[in-house]
Image 1 (cartoon, rainbow, N blue to C red):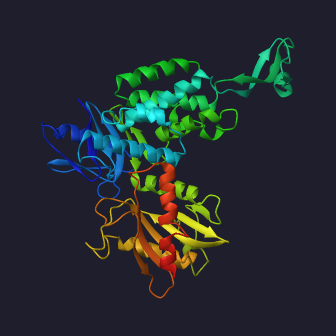
Image 2 (tube, rainbow, N blue to C red):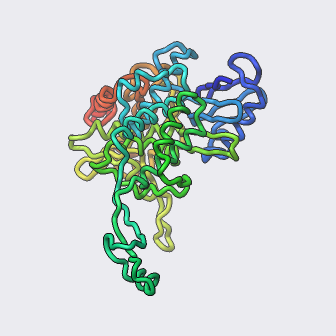
Length: 440
């Protein structure tokens, strides 16, 4: 059965016809995501199984159950006809691009052009990219490191382990307790890559990808099998000797670790690779802001600040720590706080408040008090329903303070990295035209 596909906050009706999902398959998918770390979050978590439809929420990715799979894509206004294969292909391309920026992955233009964005699911595209990169890397040779080994030999190798020699071989001096370094491929990085190959082999439904993964598994046959929960991520050091493996290590984390996503397998009945768009959007924008202000008088910190809202009277204990998404500093002072929100705001013409959450405004007022920044920005994804281009849409003064709060948007659907960075620098960040108008 071909994979089902739906946009976030959209629905698939129950049924047997085109564009419908049989109710029993919908129940299987819901059962899989109930084991996800996103289950039970806002508005029923990942999926809501209604009486006559299956509705997606603000988590995207791929869920695979027995006999079916469901792809949930973000609602990005790409320049393509609504609901077409071309539109979904462009959305997949933009989502992979956001992941690449957030994870600092390099995906070559030639590889991107060669992918079947319109017909492959997001999962299969990511697996294809991983296989291509890994195939190129192993052709140049697996990374190796010197590992301390201990063995009882007839001739001395390395150094003599005296405590072991005099406890184990005191009556047999023909055996020497040796301790030596040996160059080995059976290291933490290769064990992680092997675990990733095995994991993806269980998730993929593409015959081409499965064949590639089998070939790669054969290459890693001599590497130790280590369960995912006990992989030693902290032992991996990326340096000049293994720099070519940096992207592969990042993709392994993407598939195996809970960063933007959760990967889960429930009793062999299914798997899921899910991304919370609010978190992904936050780090994507944070990376671009950092690039935009590189080499200027400004400094950027992500998830920094860490100031507390309250202090207990009895013991001075501080509680309710804040972690603004993006702080922009100049001369040791915070000049702008940016908080990203993966939500759709409306035009001021339609609604004076633009659909901005009251809780978000309260949060920004707390930031204004704690960080003394003259400018606060609530940054949303741009969409076609907003009047005008991306950038600042509405400006306000926080009552009783000389602090400006603005709502702004960034268009993640168009442009290459450097183009988006340039637009950010001109329209949203300090020193822009809007900045000067608001603070005059």
